[in-house]
Length: 156
Image (cartoon, rainbow, N blue to C red; front, side, top):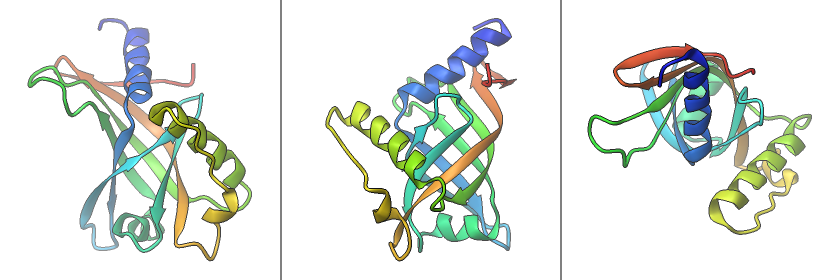
């Protein structure tokens, strides 16, 4: 890979080319939990959205502890060639003020990945719905590969 710019470009490529991320949470007792979720990120690579049931273990953990870790990688990569992105982030349930943005970004990403038009009605993900959008705001982003773990700035 080489330069810092190359690492940042690699991180963006990994985020763009993968559909799923693992959201790692912990409860009040620091018991960890990892959950794979389909995600959609903004154009600035500063946040991502996913949908989960409000009674899921990771959603409950987020309500107790907003600090999360994310892992994005291609699990089909050959042994020894894995490149991935690890992210320290904060998470929260999306409220009414941000629901339109979340559904727009999520719908566009799902449509592009699934090759089918998908539209999400924001009202379906507000109370009393059992499914909600969650936002993860990226704090620190790291790219891995070639036996390295490099922090990158994706703010451009």
